[in-house]
Amino acid sequence: MKIGITCYPTYGGSGVVATELGIELAARGHQIHFITSSQPFRLTGREANIHFHEVSVSTYPLFEYPPYDLALATRMAEVADFYSLDLLHVHYAIPHSVSALLASQMIATHTMVARRRRLPFITTLHGTDITLVGLDPSYLPITRFSIEQSHGVTAISSHLADRTREAFGVTNEIEVIRNFVNCDLYSRKPELVAQMRPRFAAENEHLFVHLSNFRPVKRVLDVVEVFARVSRVLPARLMLIGDGPDRSAAEQLALRYGVQDRIHFLGKQDEVHDLLPLADLMIMPSQMESFGLAALESMACSVPAIATRVGGVPELIDDGVTGLLFEIGDVDRMAEAAIGLLQDKPRLQAMSAAARRTAQDRFCTTRIIPLYEDYYRRVLERNA
Ligand code: GMT
Image (cartoon, rainbow, N blue to C red; front, top):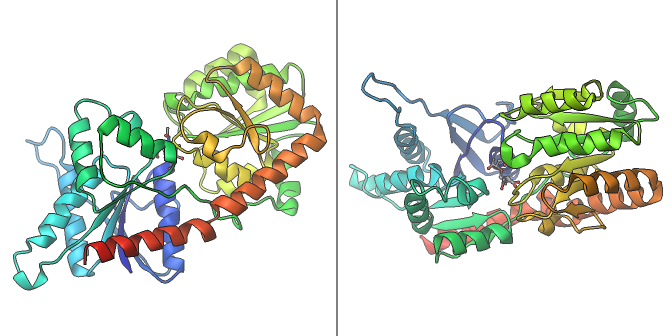
């Protein structure tokens, strides 16, 4: 198949999923065209079967807000026409599904009659496009409209599919295809851990990790709260991977607790699969997670997560078996549980192994990518 993929190419779970999906589909022989504002950060640009089309937005003094969504729609239609794409797959509804709808209509009414055809588009919902941004009154009607107009809609968890039906009254069928991880790339390789871990923690120290875009919804301050409490009892270090609006507040809090020297602020990192396996535990205390891709990536590396019981997280983490779940903001219990787990090595080992097994058995690319391929075929058949 020839597939056009659009996503936010910068840091963020939806961009990661879209890029990894494109890479996996290309490896299976599909022709993939990324149509995005810049090259997705996990792409090297050297992958076979992958093409990248940059969307450039020309400015004009009159434009207070350059119309990216229109430039995107135009580029989508051009690429679809030139390369005879079979379908468009957009990740994150706002504004991508609106642009895809326009592109689809442009192709259906092509000025050259012979080139008029159907161009189905699929929208994958990731979370904040529904739970935060999508519910904003200025975006809700158009988000609902573009979801309803999509030829296919997928959501990354049952929770998100339910939320979309409830909050938007969407009647379209929503296919649940959960997030996935490449279990070969994301795995604990003992030689690499032995070589790299000493850079972040001494032998007697426990190592925590957190990975996010440091937006308020991630509650990065709770990560520092938990870590400060654990540090009073056990020798420990923390790797904070990512960057965003709450980074300086996290730095200030670390200073207040006097744990700043025990925290590695690593900023945005491309090779997180090398860093995650170094840790003993991940902390993901989010206010909301429609899935929690960061926790899945860490579980695949045999690192269980201390997380919050929100959104789609319970669909990923089996509380007490593959990780531990808490109420939002309950940093005391999270710290207490982390200390207990780190002091009980056999239990931690069992949980790490169970986390890895879950990633392998339920969320590996080998299991999830065929679900997308099958869904594409069904959408194409329906719209032949
Ligand atoms: O919250 C983020 O990290 C950004 C956001 C995005 O769309 O980039 O993430 C959402 O999509 C991820 C990938 O599907 C999910 O794993 C996250 O749970 C989801 N975030 C929220 O629902 C807050």
